[in-house]
Figure: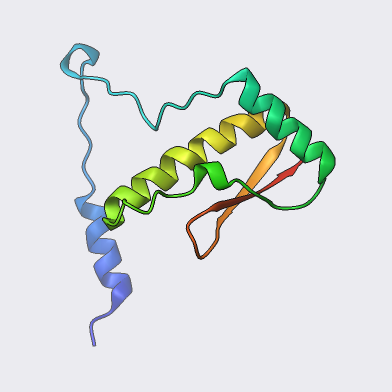
Length: 111
């Protein structure tokens, strides 16, 4: 059986760097862009007040049933998660997001 430590040392020796001029690069924005309306923020804030420290199932953000492709479902979940995190940030809460068995986000907003 090969020694993994020796293999790791070889990989470390192969690690290479190059200096790049800024004008040789292209920049792409990272992550997903999300937007939240004032009405959505108000509704979420009211629900948090009604049910503090409880997971809220946000049915409006469920994965649509017609999205059967796993990659499309994953992209939808990432977009929704980004929107939910933005809501939490704007309202001053940390968010914990879990997806239930029906692909509906369940969110805990905590201070």
